[in-house]
Length: 178
Image (cartoon, rainbow, N blue to C red; front, side):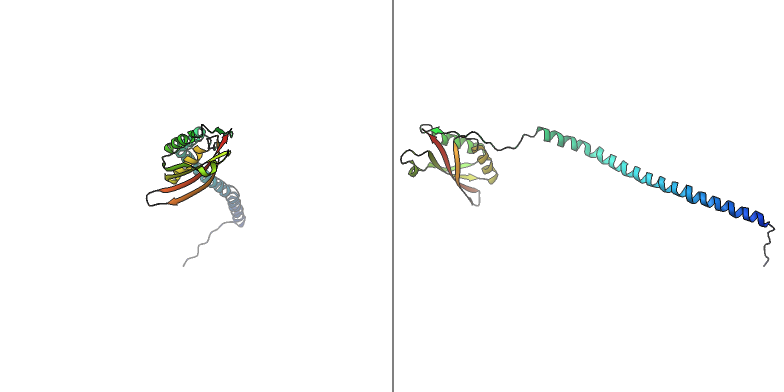
């Protein structure tokens, strides 16, 4: 095998190594960090593009949610000022109760006044009610019943499940004034 013999002066070799080192330093200190910086920027651009696409897709949904929350009325339970009803008008409660249960899609099985409590001049009239229907409708009925200003309290609620519906038993106290 022949050996290659280059006739390069030693001084030129040193210049070649120094220039190569400078080029290597420029690549390591300048080009490589710039490449990493551009790569990070590219990743951030991709993330922002994905967020932009998601916002374009979810934007209409967000607007409809905003509109529904603006239109939504407050869900406050009624709390009227408590009053009493005269003895002569106490019979109107049955009509009011029938109207409320009709709105709530419940069926009245029985609605009777408790005559044992009528001795003397009691300040309350107790009505016993038996209703049938669905539980969600019973909830609506209780909210509507809360709007009656002369309703003092509901003493007892009994719920029993039947195959076709639920049965609700209530003892309702009505405030009677003189």
